[in-house]
Amino acid sequence: MLRLLTAGESHGPALVAILEGLPAGLAVDHDEINKDLERRRMGHGRGARMTIEQDQVQIISGIRHGKTMGSPVTLMIENRDHRNWKGIMDPDSPSAGKEVRRPRPGHADLAGGMKYNHQDFRNVLERSSARETAARVAAGAICRKFLGLFDIKIYSQVVSIGGVTSLTRGQTLTPELHQLAEASTVRCPDDRASNQMIAAIDLARAEGESLGGSFEVGADNVPPGLGSYVQGDRRLDSRLAAALMSIPAIKAVEIGEGIEASQKLGSSVHDQIYYSADDGLYRRQNKAGGIEGGVSNGEQVVVRAYMKPIPTLYQPLTSVNTYSWQEEKADIERSDVCAVPAASVVGEAVISLVLANEMLIKLGGDSVDEVVTNYQNYEGYLKKVWKWKKTLY
Image (cartoon, rainbow, N blue to C red; front, side, top):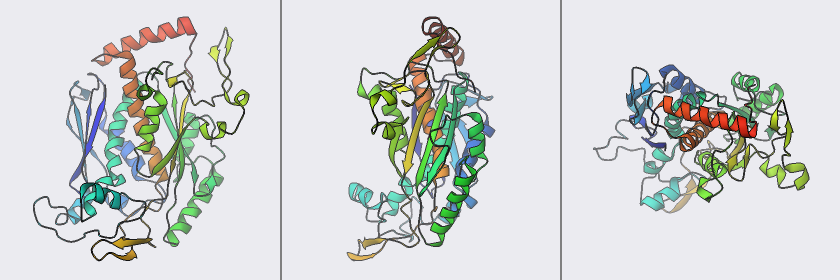
């Protein structure tokens, strides 16, 4: 139903996102998109590039007088740093230097060069750069707006950086916890852990190192019935996992307490089902992360993603110069020390994209009014037959 394409290089003129499949009549606000772009740009551990870029979205198509028209929405984000790279990134002139010949271990440089037969690895890193995720955050902000029509809320928090883990890991994500995360420069609501994370990032910076970590994304009021068990590629958890794994440097994903659950007996893992006249069907825990058999079950959808340390090190690792075939230190590109806080914002965006798509698959409709009417019918069925109640914190 929803299709997203992004284009653009890290130091090219701009990033572009084309989002097709949104229903007509959805109110879209420039400022809300820019707010999410700003959230992605910030965070302790970010590099000098983020002091250059301001990331303001330009709407090129698909929106008129503040509402979607049903046609593809095109968003553009200017790369302000392009002015310093015009000669190097010129699409017509011969090479102007800044070639990359010593691929960085852990980056796409070497593998991408071998795949596309690039001798200059800049042709790889310019597109494989996480700069591309700004376009996805812009598109995700519109999908978040769509989800808001159904009171679906998206929250996130950073739960670990390096060896520091927050005490809030695994807690139910609420608006209050989310706001505490927003107030932290590492997006961690636990003050003690937040301070330790900042210190760890500062130490890594001083040593020319980088740090990874993990973050959680929660989605409230996701109705039962999104996704399907009938085919593997239609399972909601597989689509969410794929979306998170598409974020650069993410190396592992779990749904709910997937890793911890693998070490326990089934009786302590599976979320037992209860009923009361006041609450209808309910659970006392949510180890499954709101998904059973590839289908949302009405509980909060909870996913966790694990990010490796960024592969650009200012004390570079050993590589090979592919001109001379001699072992040398890897090339250095301007980079972050830690981007886990920014990745959590990207995580919100890609989860919003998946859930918006699943809502459209479930409900259908070419206009917002039609989709909302279909949702009200489905919600009425859920309340009548299954006694489903939203969880509004």
